[in-house]
Image (cartoon, rainbow, N blue to C red):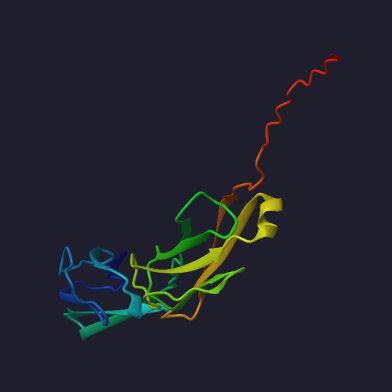
Length: 212
């Protein structure tokens, strides 16, 4: 929210009456006083809530005030203010495997969820697992607060048993609809690989030789 404060000052040599003020974007400004003696001032306030359509900005407002002078008739003055705008790009990404551990030949299914935690819509949202490739999401355009998800599966290989874990890393990205700027986020998850080695107990039986 932007708060605009407007001040009108009588810098002339006579009093001014019937003073009004208008913002070219926000409309009429309610002033404290509409009559000013020499060097007196009055003021008013308007507020404006920035919306996505205002980006990338800036916002430029021009205020115009008019009044009546007993000497010169109508007097007019104006001033302009410019406000720069910025966006908050925030992307959240999680990887949730369906299990914390798995054995060779078992299949892991990862669920990838990306959330737009920023204040502008994101388009072209993607999630790519560095090992498994692109994730098919249920939507690729996210308004603020919206989320998208998709799944990828992986079957544990014999070589994974040596490492003991399988690591999944994914990169999420989306493009700001108003500005074209990019939001990114990376996430990771680990799954423990169960060992297939079995411990074997050896039983020794005594052998007794007898001479008859």
